[in-house]
Length: 155
Image (cartoon, rainbow, N blue to C red; front, side, top):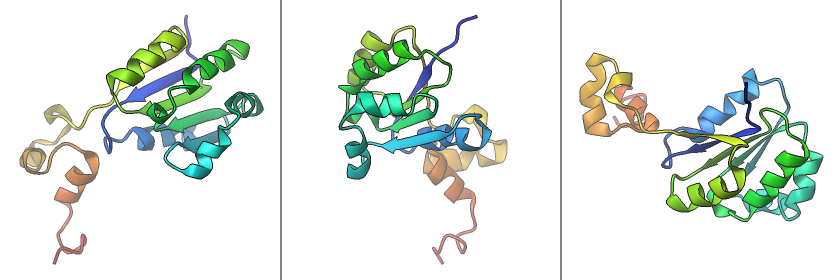
């Protein structure tokens, strides 16, 4: 049976990629390191990405907004090849063609890909379908649509 050293979760902003990945904080067996590439301090952590991955080789490394640093894919490939264990990386990013092409070139056979979409009709209780059409399928707006207006500060 094959296993992967990582997973790439792609999808539009605010669809729940980071929230999904962070579930590993409470369910996973490994220590977790999160790097958010929209934070300058986290970008600095990857100034020497090869060393960072080596130092954290026994941890689950979650990299959010990975499309901001496509140059990391060959370094991640090398890190996986040097220490191939399951659940080493979770890479989160937009579902742009650029990230898919660059990551599949270097990470093929090393990571699994999953595309996360907004909520669909099949995921919504029948009484909530109107809210899905009015507010959209993004989790934050859909959940907010079902909360009393007073608790949201709208009244």
